[in-house]
Image (cartoon, rainbow, N blue to C red; front, side, top):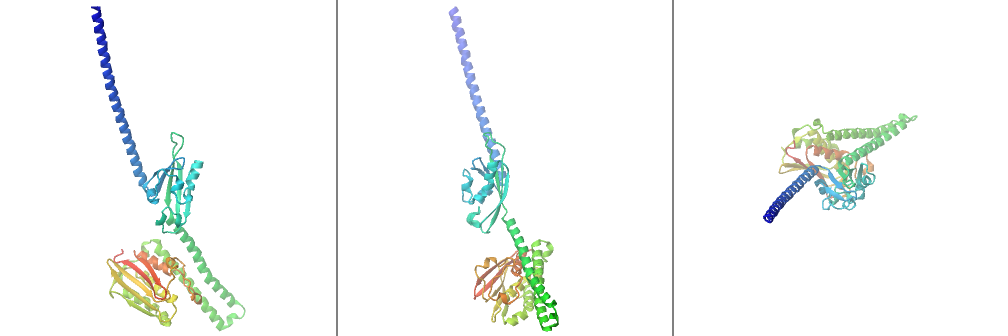
Length: 404
């Protein structure tokens, strides 16, 4: 009887143990299932957080990089990928990713000192981050680097922002060049006028009527030049100011505008025995724009052709045609042309093409073609120039029929 009880107790204990084992296995499976679910949820949350971070950083207009303590790129947003197109970034050392080591100097200094660094870098066209797509000449970039919060291993990552400031840099250079050139252009005629005035004030000089008249004639030419420079600078300033009053929009007939220009230049045309003609595709064509500025544009182009070619038998044509929603207007001449090396620069302020006859006359302001370009662009148009020396030089303007 005792043995039976012992066996029953053992069986009960074994059954209890078996049930406990089953419960433990079940609990372990539930635990493993929960852990797996937690891991999956954590991975999903991390992925969502990473995707959200990437979306936010991809929304930045500037290139954004995250770099580890060994200067290896861990992350690059879409703007960075676009900037350094054609080159792999993630996982590469910064020194290999950047074409010019000057781009990496601010970052390396930040890694070395741990302090935020912000600097501007001006690069030649050949080493621009844009590579072969860079067409702007010298290009400027702001490099902003700062360490992020410490990582668990004690090696903080560094974020780098690369901002393209080429437009601002070039505009600043234009302003500096403009001030320097304007000062020079005004100083020269003022010095000439001052010299002649000193001579006139010498004893007896003013009593020499013929000499005084010759001096005053030269002074008058240079005062006219100063007035023209000042007026041209004011015109450019108004065109670039963005003021609504700079452009007055009203319909006008192109033929009357051209006719007005040719009448104003009639004496020069006659003295040079030039052949100036007008060939419009439609005598009644009407443009929407500011007639004052269009008169300036055509006057400067025709006058420029006459000044650069002070010879007999010069042929100048002012013409127009239509192309879809645009009107094409051109001024072409049969003069000595523009050297190919000068063509990319002729719309720059105060730029002059050196000709062998340029010293025979008082120079122009050097602002005429700049005014032409700014006025055409103010009407949402474009202007281009082609030249075959001794055959044809042509300024072609493409203007929307309804630019405003």
